[in-house]
Each structure stands twice: as C-alpha cells, then as structure tokens.
Length: 567
View 1 (cartoon, rainbow, N blue to C red):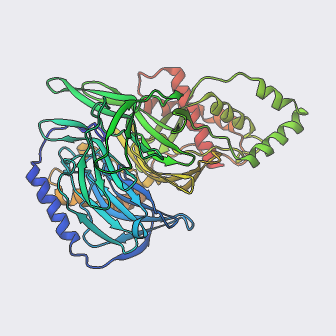
View 2 (cartoon, rainbow, N blue to C red; view 1 turned 60 degrees about the vertical axis):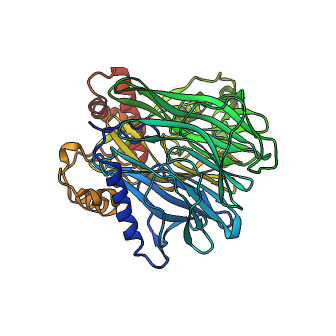
View 3 (tube, rainbow, N blue to C red; view 1 turned 90 degrees about the vertical axis):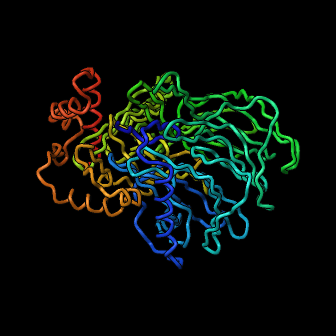
C-alpha cells in the first residue's frame, strides 16, 4: 500500500504500528527532550520544509512563532516539535530550544493571548509512525510563556478527546475548540463538538448549543466576531460507503455559534445557519485560515481532490478569499499591482501610442479564467509542472506584461506563492505571512519551505521573504528504500538526512541541462530556437495520453519561466 500525501483528515491507511508502540516512541522522544536543561536561542537558516505546523504572531513583538509540523519524503514521515522565531524587521530566523517541550506533532492548533507578556496555547494534533501509516492523536494542552520562554503542560479534566484537524480560537477569556477527527487502525471518526477552556479558572466545559449545527468535519475555518460569537465555514469529512471504500465530502456550508451572555461557561449558546452574499470560495480542503484587518477573516490556498477508489488527484490553489464578518459577505482577494510600476507602464504605452493604448485596454471585456503552468526543478533534476488557474484580469495583466518583456524584461513580473495546501498562515500589523505547505504532481509530493507576505490593506503585490530551495525537494521512491531503516531515526527529524542528500546532489554531474539563453536573445527568438526541446520535455512529464495542444501550452510556459529566470 502506497500512501499518497498526508492531508489533514484524509488518511486511510493500513496499520503496522500498535497504539502502545507509538506511545513508547513518543515517551522515548520525551526522555531525550527532558535532558535539555536550559534555554538555548541561536540564529539559524530558515526551517526545513514542512506542512501542518502552526505559525503565530507574537502579541507584543514583531515576531512570528513556528511550532511543529511534518515532512514526508516518499519513504518516511518526520514529525517536529522545534520552535522557530522569525524576526520580521530583520528577515531572520532563530531556533529556540526550551526544556520539556510538547511531544512532536502536526495538525495541532495554536492560539496566542496577550496575558503576561504573551502566551502561545497548543492543543491536540497527531504523531505518525515513521512509515506514516498509523497515528496517535493527542488530547494534551500546553502553554508557552513567551516572556520567560518556558513550556507548561496544563492538566485539567473534562477536555476534548484526542484529535487532529480540529480548530481552536481565543475568544474573550476562553479557548474555543471545534471539530477534528480521530483515526485508528480499524476506523475513524469526525467530530462536531464544541469545548471551551477558561483561561482564568483553567477548567474545561463542553458546550451544548441549541439549534442545528455543522455536520462533523475537520480542517474548517473558525473565526470569532467582536461580540464573542463563533463562525464556522467549510471543512472535510469522509464516510465508509462499502468495505474498504470511503467517500470524502467537501463542506461549503457556514454557521454562526452565538452566545447569549458575556462569554462565561454557563452562557447559553445557539447554532444558526449563515447564508452569506458575495462570491464564496470554490470547494476545497486543506486551506489555511487567518484573521485579517477590518473585521475580516480569510482563507488561502487548499486543494480540490478528484477521489477514486485507488488514488487522489488534486487541483491546488493559491488564491485568497475574504469573509466580511459585519456584512456577512465573501469576496475574492484581487491583486492591484504596485502603483509605481503601473505608472511607469502607463507612461510607456502613452508615449508609444499617444494615449490610445490605455483606453483600448479599459474597454476590453473581462476574460474568463485561464490555466497557467509553472516549472519547478527538483533536486534530482526532474522538471515538475505546477498548474494554476487565474482570473481573467490577472491573465490579462500577465499577457500585457509578456508583451512588454522585450522592452524591459524585469518590469512588472508578478511574484506569488505557488498553489499549495496545508500551509501555515498568520497576520501581523495587517500583513499576511504564508509559510510552507505542500502540493503534488502525480505520485510525488513537494513539501515547501518558502515564506511570502502581502499587505492586506494595499493588496498590491506578494513579497518573497524566503525562496523555495529546490535542493530541499528530496523524494525517495519505495524501490530506493532500505527495508531495515531504523524507525526511531526516521520519526525523529529530517535534518541530517536532508544535509546528506544535498551533498550527494552536489556531487552528481552530467545531468541534462536546459538550452541556455544567448546574450541579448529575445523571448520569441529563444522559444523559436528551443521549442522542440520543451515540447519533448513537457510530453515526458505529462505522459503519452496528454493532448498535443495542452503539451504545447505547457512547453511554452516552461520555456517562458526558464527564460525569465535566466535573463
């Protein structure tokens, strides 16, 4: 059985590890962590590729806090409990080693509150066996005291059962938890229960809202309103339709959980259905969520899967959707482009066409969505293509930019994160930060380690803070694996293995090189000269069944990407 990805709430695997084995493995890792006796903070390169971690904004400092996550290299699953801090002003990372941290995990939830210099609360999540085919779900609650850099486990009875893929938000003086799932060797269960943890009394309570609430699900959007109410949107669940066959559901409904009191445990809560106006997100799972400025919540990315009995094929997204809480309205985020570049381009066109060019462009009717394909070169030299659907307005911008390439190749190139799911998201000072995540091409999973930001007030352009490192894209096929690999080493962390793979890749030589761009060569001339090479390469990647028209389209996109990267 080959595992395809490790998407939150979408694992259906054979069990080779018993629960006791996983608990013993976790205990062994905790004993290693317990040997740390002092806080060690050191500057470091950006964290290794990962998904399903948590990225949180420090409530008092210009810092982002990254905790946990997972990485799958085709053979092994690596779980993390490292704590990284990103300094926004310096664009630098540091690793903070603190004694007695929570055990390694992914698909947990983290929430920040400003109490006592800032606290980061962490609940639940999962630990995976090294082969990625059995899971242990946590039900523990931890708090990181940011001022003193100390971890503390909070032991209180009556909390949620073990789970991952749930959602947690800080609301008034409580942590609110909704949904999630639990998977064992024999079965799985999705939840739609709601728990509150009181941050003053340190006690759990299970809410019993009136009304009809959401169906059980994981990976939904959960946001708070200024009045202390809760909003739930979307998510994923699955159910067994016959033996060994599961059917997944992408939820697109929306609910309000309303309190009739001042945010206390004894308050009465009620579910009601929301029917928002505007343009809702297209159905998807694995999207990431954050709270934006101006009383808006947002979601980014995700994947829409075409599920068959034996496999999953997904279309990945890199779009942003905003939900205006006050107006009960969805709308897609539209990039406006940098103002200075717009003026330069406009002046250039006016000088050339005596002012007629802009008027013609404004009169053109909007175009429909267009598929764009980008190229990623992996560590082993494999060229993978990323499919992306963009709106007509963005396509028109890209087309006009390509026309201007001959005049100024560097002007107006739009940077954006590649489509992905299960990324880590947070907002600080009205700026959205997106870290890591993953996408798939065929049976191969790309786990990302890049960092992007965008000012949500301006919505002009994405900025690349950490670029994706192709060398970090390690992928080991099953045939390459050593059957007697040490499982403990595999689950502990991937740093040493990643370093050795980088060294190996540097030693390898003789790999096929793309046709180089000649000095002062125009894009059209380069394409004309090398078109057959790119068509052959696209055909190799897409397979013999791909339509010729689409192969040519992909080939041209790959050639354009390579050309732009070279000039």
